[in-house]
Length: 260
Image (cartoon, rainbow, N blue to C red):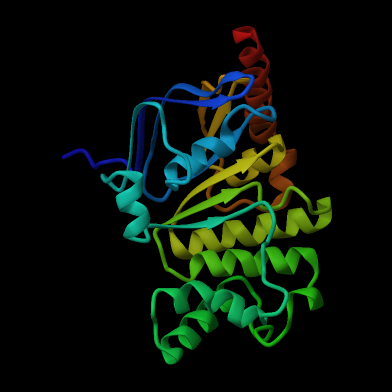
């Protein structure tokens, strides 16, 4: 019996109506994401990567085609708290401690103080921030703030984690470190991850599947299944296998411009 994909899009399109006329953000996107996959979306600015993630999260409504999340509509999946969402900026409230920032969505859904404390401790441990719960965001580095943001998204213990270019504003050394930590977290939790990035090395290093998108209107130009092992030290980026996949991503990005 064939398993239902965690996320299944069929001929998905989205057009925004603006004062300057329609903007075709996505066009005829068909894609399956299976349970436990780490899927990166890469393409030029404005190609619909973030829009597609927002459709999954029920933050945008498609104007054509269909999409299901855990076999449900995105709205049903959102109400069932099926996913956590990590934005480009950490978005931590400066007047709340790290622990209370992470607990905020748990407060909203009505968990007891004891349950909140237990969850906060668990997710801080997952992102290697144990002991920082009493600190304020301004007392943490940018990378640590982003890890706290990931912890907040993990607090629901949802099976899906959606990440919209979470490391884009960080320097390369910090980004490399967080890439390693994210892979370790994915290995420990087995979550299904959708990850938006502009970085070819980041997409290749992290992913089991790379979705290459064209300039607007966003189409899928290539879906690359990674042959790299699940255990990936940083120096795997210097291997012929890694460079071959990176080359195919570049070719897919170039091919996307032929749609213009």
